[in-house]
Image (cartoon, rainbow, N blue to C red; front, side, top):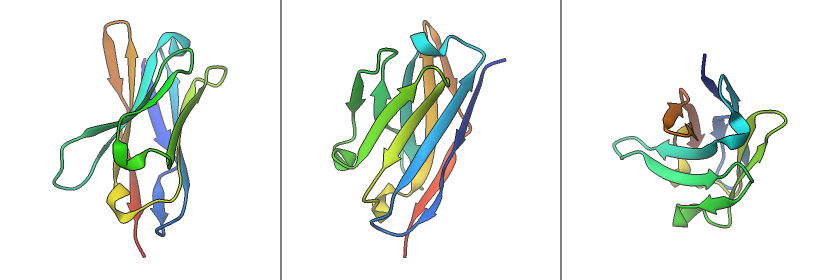
Length: 116
């Protein structure tokens, strides 16, 4: 059974930090490309960051470059999104996605709310 379980979301004030975690099971995590997406209210789901099985990381969302970092720990089957200097525009449901060969798996999403 494939599972992607996100954690670490919640409410934070502008300028604060959160670290999202996505714990994977049921597939070969170390050979999977992992991504974080987000979807704000009324907006399309958008790619935030991607990391390969060998930890080559790419930030795809220009507005989070320099603030967000994607990483992974293959020994723990976990991918992380470190989010610093958070802004209200970062408010969204954040989703973990895995690509293993031709299969795509999604987590359930975790809410991140940035407000005063």
